[in-house]
Length: 404
Image (cartoon, rainbow, N blue to C red; front, side, top):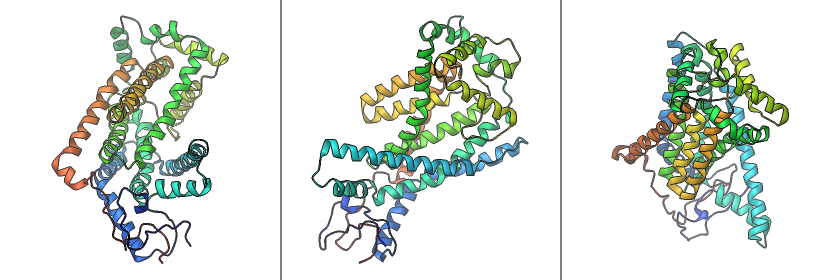
């Protein structure tokens, strides 16, 4: 049974840049030629992702044994992320198909709308090349996410929250003897402004996932794609886990609870709760959910508490680095977004300002190191990221479908 089949015309070679070179079908009863083409692309993808696969494998192994080395343990949440990741990917695919259909109908306006939509979706977007490059990521990311969450939840068990008084004092000294939230309050201390900032802050989750998916399936810039994916994953592992364990802190929202000291952030939290009675401030509910999970030692998607360094700012700044490599306008937009995330992290009580200040150079360092590594002769020879797909002969299959 074949869902969609599109093969090359007999006796006619097609360049690798043509959509006709790539997959047009998903089905059963693949011919020998189809299997050979699929195997070639899959092996090529595994070679290109070999460094990334090694990084994730090492991270997951270390993530399994670090808690054991420190004499702590927790439930490993593989099952939590597997279904979630595939569900979100499916939703993203459906939304993309709908958006593209609307664009095709309203902007392109082809005579054969249904036929053009089908050819574009399966011939331009769902190609053999794209399916093969997304497979390693789709198989690895659930395990990566589970390892990250497990380590983050166990941070206070591995290294108790101890840096909050220091970071709070550094924040105050660095900002002229006042806490950063106090400088921001006259400008942002209005319930509807706070609600808007909260909305922008929570949009980080959708942008992070959307840009990550974009880079997973992008086939136009293989080296830049790999640099971003490695930087993205290493930021979560090194900034979100390793540095967070070394600099274990709960953040302003939990300052009084984790230190037992007089809380200089209590007026900020009082204002936020007042603002939440006037306009939606969902951060308050998330903060209490995380604290309840921490007290109960429970497991939840996105669970765990840590402040320094700010992963939100780190990932937002990774958008700047990616945008700068593609288009200056993207970099400027991403830079503005990063500033808003930094401001929101302080105003909503999630972070000390220095959490974000530290994240930015750390992310830049990871980006530059990954770029240097990808450009090294040995790694470049192994990954061969710039390699083009070979131009097939007339007998080479161009789809995964039933044999003729």
